[in-house]
Length: 262
Image (cartoon, rainbow, N blue to C red; front, side, top):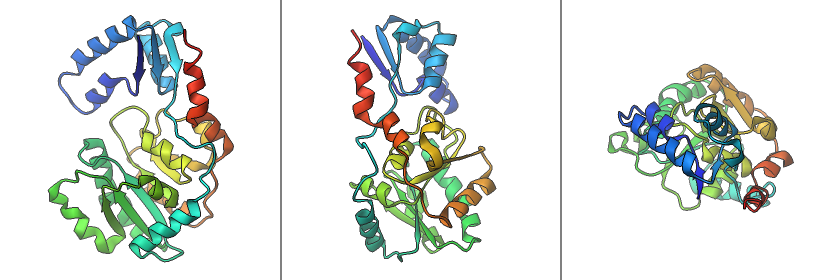
């Protein structure tokens, strides 16, 4: 029996205020103890299982979330043109991206932070930018973000070609502060060439050393620092994703770990 775990799930639901998280903790711990192997998406969660739940270290395997890319995508410039044409953006307009299921409270909270705290600070700067929001299940009360259309916000809704948006983005915004686990959309964004600005919580589980200049982390709730990091990046040439990143997160390298299990 092999368990592939994306989070220590009880921790995620505890952070979301679900009353039944202690029941999930007991179930999850028992499942880990009975499994032959557990594949952990982050080293931190593997260390937690070994330390707190006394799981045999020999059963605990690092298996990060991966991407299907060995290197920076060759069609990135083409996709930049596609997205600029789709939304009528000038050649020097910086493309900022946020995406996720907007019916999921941590993502909706992050969107609210972008609208209420980060974007007003960006509006006061002299950078030319647009923030593209992708994701379905936006509550009706937001009215498709109509009130923010003249404030640099574009609501794209659900998009079938999210890879095109990742490739076109200069900066990916990740102001997530709850939910637990590694934020897979951030792993994808860097792989496709965007530079990520993230909160400390949002960056949990990603190997920062592999990211190089592609990941900027600021303290939770420090939206002034978050906006300043975005403004600073928007005024520079966007760096390429380093080869070390693909060595760490390319699926072809990751799955070699699984083939050693017996």
